[in-house]
Amino acid sequence: MSRLAEALDVDRSTVSRWFGGLAIPGPVAAAVQSWLLLYKITGQKPDHLNVQARRRPEP
Image 1 (tube, helix red, strand yellow):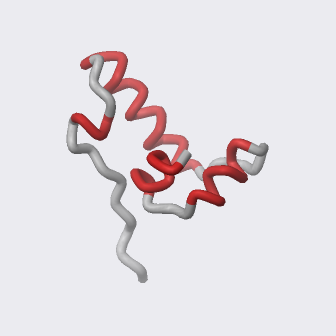
Image 2: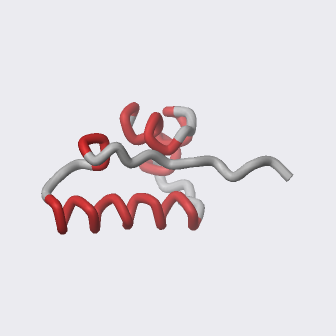
């Protein structure tokens, strides 16, 4: 959970709540699905591909 939290730039407790049943925001779900697809295609984990989540700039 710590590595996922770090990759998504969120607190570990947030990821823990998602695993506990809290709804996962759409952009986070999209990022995870993209990482899973990359893994399926390349066999490499996102951290080996130098892929990182980026926050949107504050309005």
